[in-house]
Each structure stands twice: as C-alpha cells, then as structure tokens.
Length: 248
Image 1 (cartoon, rainbow, N blue to C red):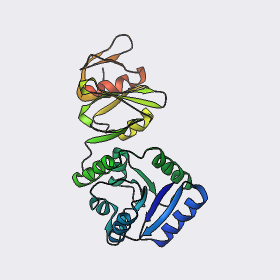
Image 2: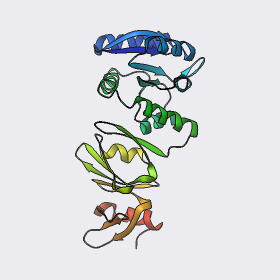
Image 3: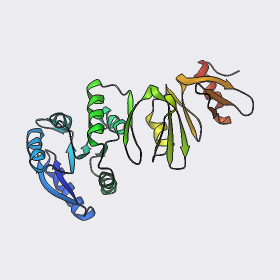
Image 4: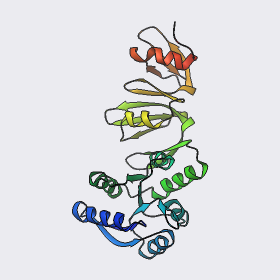
C-alpha cells in the first residue's frame, strides 16, 4: 500500500483526487490532507508518507518551497498543476511525474503505477528538479533505467539509438545507459539546436559530429568513431543544420 498525502489549497481539487483514488487506485491509502506549504510540511513530518500528490501554486507558497524544507525526501512526488510552463518542462527533465489539471483518471493511474514500481532515487530526482528551478536553465537530464536514476549533463550525451520501446544513450567516456522510453519522446524533449534526428533510429549531438560521408546513402562519423545513418529524407535538412546553408 502507498501511504499518501494530498496537498492542495483547493478543496474541490482534493475532493476530485480522493474520488479518483477511491475508484481507480486500490493500492493507495490517503493518510492525510494539507492545504499549503506550512501545513504540508508538518503532516509529511508526522506521517512519513510513501507518496505525496503536491500542487504547485498555493496561498502560502509553492510545492517547490515545501520540498526545499525537506532535507532528504524519502517519498515519491506527483505534482498537480494547472500551469503548463517551465516547471512542466523541468519535470520531464528530472523524471518527476506530474498531472495537469483537470486531472485525467487514466493519467493518475499511470503516474501512481510508476510511483509503485520506482520507489528508489526520489531524493536525486527532487534535488535535480529544484536545481533546474533555481537556475531556470535546463542543462542536464535524469535518465531512468531499470535499476537506477542517473543525472546526465546534456553536453555529455554523444548520441541516442532506438531499440523498439527502449532508447540507448551513448555518453562521453563510452558509458551506455538504456532507458524504457521511446526515441520520439527524447526527440521532443532535447533542444533542437543541439540534437538532430538523422534517422528513425538515431539522434546525435551536433557538437560531436566529426565528419559527414555523402556516399552510400550518407552517414555521420562521430568523435568516438561510431557511424550513424542519415535517412535520405533528412539529408538536406542535416546538411543545412551542419553548414548553416542550404545544400547545392
């Protein structure tokens, strides 16, 4: 069972969550509710929950303010927010779950399922999220593999390779991390001025392109010597990105 606290200053929002959890999430037990930062901190300290469903904007501060008061969070966090802004992008980079209001029951079920399966690495992910928020700069990403969470600087990523519903990250120093997420998700997430999808199976960091070989359909040689295919339909776009001008 996941011992859970709901923290939101809107009574209607807490009521909707209670109803959805009672109906769809039998593995969740709501041990308490809170209406803000001060109240939430007190109740988290009292109950030591497994999971906190946490609003961002509250009358006495933000959900981030609350997390900053907790030295080593031992619980999972699912943010609930009506705001689709920098915070949401930061959630994605820190591998922290979030739900946009109004809450969709299917998305709630999926998020709680993840919290049930992945109970480790909470402190690392929250630390990463708070760092992103303070800097207002996204320069690293948390990669969730089967047994760990690893925070990786974007400029340490050499390339990505698709393997069905998994993605292999190849890093500087020949380290490889495999995550159970599709390449398309990372194509949408990574900055397009730094990363380029050359092929349905490949994304490369443009900073580490050593050479582009035009013959044999076209392929890129990366600084580590690896060769990455360039799809015929992406070739012109790639040349333009690489050289800053349209191909002849």
